[in-house]
Image 1 (cartoon, one colour):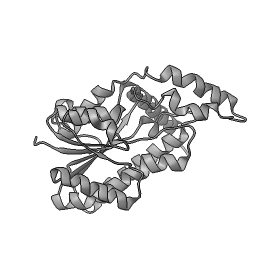
Image 2: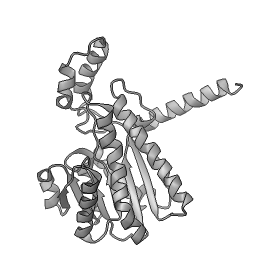
Image 3: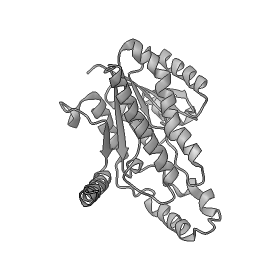
Image 4: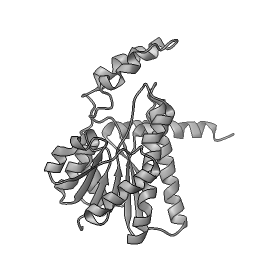
Length: 273
């Protein structure tokens, strides 16, 4: 497969950094972005092109940044929308902006280029909590990921209606992987606040984050390499047609199977309505 140019958001830590490393290891080109470009120095030393990008900037700014990125290698083959946001203290609108709207804006900014070159690939790093994992106090995060998934699935149907088959989409729904999402310091402001009539919920979250952080079962680097193989049609993806949305991580598969079985049971019990 020819070398691809990847445009990846949120590369300073976690999945984003591992995505960039996995892309470079395949001999592809990566434009790694982050709000603070200094946090990308290690990736730059490995051969990545780096640029500053806050995915929450107004759409005209996003279009300018995409044009700047296109000037680096002359084209972009893959958008890997990874930048995400999960904090207990913040609102639904803030989660929707980063986890949903930002991806849609990036796609809109890239669509003219992809239409011209007659190829493009959208990879969205979503979550299995978009549909299957219910986490108390994480409703804003889950809702924003669910909205992202539904918007992208609808977008694919709209492209098909127009006969556009050269733009591909892959939604990945990871389970729990080692990252800073559960880092207790990230949620310190919320955990110190007065939760009023919800003391049990506060205690659950206060106890959970120190236990979860650093002990998530998923290997982020391994998952990143898998995603790159999926896009390139290599490794386990060779010769296989990919689904539109794919869970990643054993815990995600277990949870989705449980939820699917429960749904089938409910349908059987209530099909006589």
